[in-house]
Image (cartoon, rainbow, N blue to C red; front, top):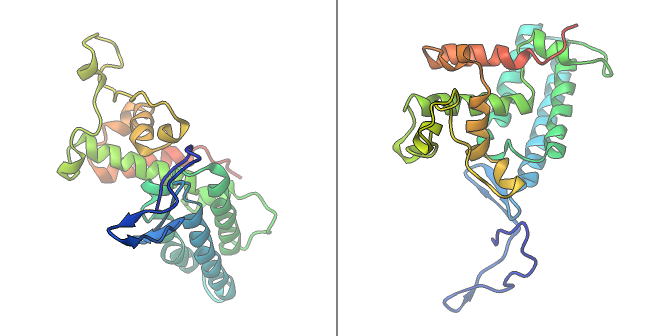
Length: 230
């Protein structure tokens, strides 16, 4: 696979010894479909197909199960596909992610026996369910919390730096993470940039949580605040 987002002319044939290597535009790696533009469109396509099929299952049994059981089905048949490696593909173009949100809305309406055209923000809020954009932020926050606590594998050591290590000015931002200078919009959409940016924008009560469990609870409530209640 040849990765390029801007170069027009790429080599058409690549040999390994005397063997011509087959060129592909996407490939599945550890459960994630990687495409040569790193747009994650193919992965989201497959995720949407799986989620849509499982929503159909929930729809067929909705009249036989209580709300609590239907929410359990959501957590077991839909949520795992959204959470899997989300830090990798969750920064995809909003147009692609919107397809997942549409399916999430369909699912929550079915679960709550709501009209298919009704607003869903209060349904997500009442049932403590995050949309895909906020699920990405939720995982992003956990990653940064664990990084800040030095609870990640050593391979992530020194991935980010604090402002105080870049300059010695005693500003109120000196303890925040330093945002790297990146030229392209694509680079700025990755968690390498979005992680420090998101963390710096969190309030001190969330950042100073004593444990990951407390942090997750506070962060989820913070993200749900953006949903409009009934």
